[in-house]
Amino acid sequence: MTNHKDGLTGWDGLTGCDDEKLIDRFFGEAGRQEIADEGFSERVMARIAQQDVAAGARSALLCRLWTWFCLLVGAVLFMVLNGWAQLVLSARVLLSAVLTQIEVVITTAPTTEILLTPAMVVLIAVFLLVVLPYQTARKLCAVL
Amino acid sequence: MTDLSDIALVSQVAVFHNKRAFDQLVRKYQSPVRRFFLNQTLGNAPLSDDLAQETFIKAYTSIGSFRGLSSFSTWLFRIAYNVHYDYRRRQKCAEVDLEQAGAAETTASSSAHTPALRMDLYHALSLLKDEERTCITLQLTDGYPIDRISDITGMPQNTVKSHLRRGKEKLADYLKRNGYDR
Image: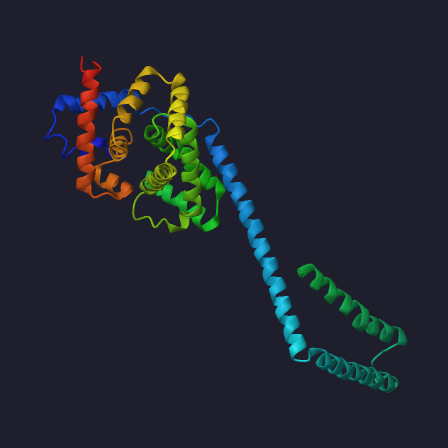
């Protein structure tokens, strides 16, 4: 910091040098003492931490509200655009495609070099029909 | 060197949200900021600490707006000045003289352990107007030159000079009347 005497312009002209010295001495003795911390910094940092926690909770709430809003918009669009019929149609197409592929693999397996046992077919079916939907549902629940 | 280390600490806080760096800044500046508020509130220690805490929290939350055009201490004191200004305005809006009387009592009680010289200092400062007191303490206890006092308070330099002149006249008169010139 700069010496305060740099800023005494405007004062010297009206009052004497003795007054200036008098005030300077008085403030030197009484006004310039250091204040001990005595836990002040810890209190400030604790309040900042509290504020951060509150801000974190607020943003989590906003995030949750935004998720529900998006879900609501999705549900409305699903209803308006006749989403259920589209979904059933897509599922049927997908299922028939998968079944066709399995049928092709099974019927051609003995003539090709692909080693496909009935146990493997069951495993693939379990993965497609149980594990995959279960994992998807689990992820969706975690997000919501 | 001090400014450089301040800027390094500030950038740590602003970019990485490094609380340890801010803790260092609080430890470094707690004494001048609390002393500033003690002088403005005429020795009311609990109130000074509350206002100083508010100042540091505001500094933390708005540290991203520090552009480094002035030194960190000037920026911090500007926040402190605004905090005190808002506090004074709230007090005036409330218009509760009873509360002021209560505050005066708190001042007296908190000053019970204050040395006589500091009591005289607060008494002398109580004779000044708020703006005069701010300018006087920033210059005489914190050592700021007029241009930086002007930056902190937002007053034109000539206004700061006028407040300093009038304040010092009142102080000199008080000190003479109380035998400090002998």
